[in-house]
Image (tube, rainbow, N blue to C red; front, side):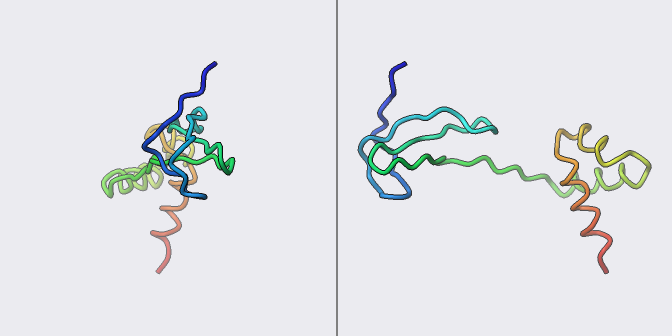
Length: 93
């Protein structure tokens, strides 16, 4: 398998622009790159998963209507930890 050298990428560690190569994908599917000079593996454009306020409110309503946190997470395609964190934030005075 041939490594592709990228010319317009810059290493965040040593700031070298030469010898930047593609190194596969991270678990979320974003391209990873590697620097041949310092050996740093990095991701340039990390995915940000933000949920709208409407999605949050709907998830909280589902939880309070009797659906488990895991069930809410599966329905929306998100982690159950997100749901539980939102519940904790709404319960605080």
